[in-house]
Image 1 (tube, rainbow, N blue to C red):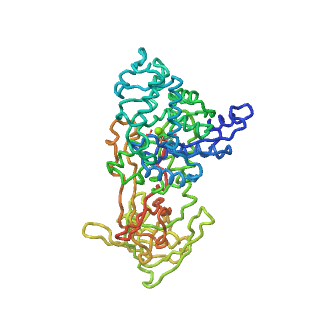
Image 2 (cartoon, rainbow, N blue to C red):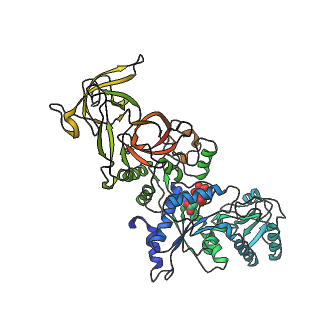
Image 3 (cartoon, rainbow, N blue to C red):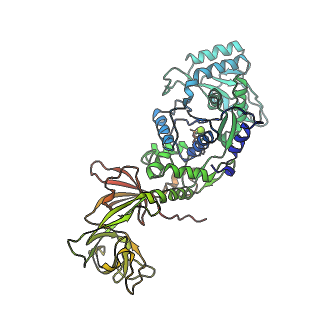
Length: 551
Ligand code: ATP
Ligand code: MG
């Protein structure tokens, strides 16, 4: 990340310097997702911050599954998280941890807090706890606050032994019922929840709350810098209270940074899950989703996401980034990496009248003018071609420089042609365009007396295959659906357009899912899958060639 755009790096640097609090230690960060959904582009920001900080300062970054709430978690999510982080370029096995591995430690630490008279068992229901929370003028209350240490130890053990029903009791920290920070008004540390955990099964009928579990996880793993998003800032005193009272040597330093918000999409896991569960998208990896797996399927590259995260920087100011900024990073990357190919998305036949019926010519063309290593490929020219329907108009029109009777255009990497006539069906749809070609114009040579203003792409009808192209638009048609109370109202019903009759140059016949190309003039596309029943290849439009971004 650019130095001047990352205040976290300067803090870390200071901390490991001779006068710093971690002098002599090695940096240790962590990325702690809760496995209750797929990761999204916001998580990518946190992933890069944590993993790159460890890389830059010569230490380690743990991947920690923060699996302390079995009601929403699943191994499917654990696997997807690993897959996505690996794809972004980081090791996910060497330093993989699970918060659930520390359940026993957390339980012991809780008993210690009880013995220090810093925690008590409370019988208020969740609703009552809320009701007795007080306000700025009145303190919170709990009639159970003065239970003896012995009684608390006994009740807590019985909670652990499944003697009470869900919600019947909690373990609360004894901090300050009148604190101005409501998180400090005797927060709940443990709740009873008889749910099967995806790793610990039915071993535990009680589960720790995030604010209690997280500092312990960090401390046990010897984390030096616990980097998290700003919404946890108000919870910091509680984080520090836990660390300071459980008697553990390691005291991680918490630093908060602002979350990534993107326009035209939602990023809360709850909303993303809703879209998936209600089948408003095709799954977590739908190419319209801002999830990492959705972006991957759409054709994004790990480098483009990394460059994006570096470009936006790390700060404490909250802002929303235009989706186009992300797309521009992708264009910059694909421009260097994606091979060019000719694909006609909405084909119409073009016949070259003066080209011999049985003649074929093989031309060698560059795969990518921006990459020397991309090599060349062969294309075959012939009498019968497909061109884009939108490249033809029946008559001369102002500012239209492509095909119409009498006009001359260049066929990409081949000859100049002049349109002579066309045929249409009874509905006025063009069925065939007739042209003659000018043999002397091969290799970009001029045609005497004619200024050629356009070059169009084409495929040979005998050397192309049928394919489907999925063209995407943004999932929401308002700028900030995240802040709308009814975000579903703004779902873009036309976010997917399917073109079923595309004609693609044969050179792409053996490409594999995930391969990305620039379809000349049409944008970047990647192979999504091959339809099993029809054997048709399905391409996703990744991004257009040019940005409509104005700023
Ligand atoms: P929810 O959407 O339910 O609030 P979450 O996105 O916070 O969940 P976690 O699994 O807890 O999900 O996130 C893991 C880490 O990723 C946390 O440290 C969190 O701060 C960070 N993170 C989550 N969303 C963003 C975001 N939009 N930008 C930057 N970091 C994020
Ligand atoms: Mg969270």
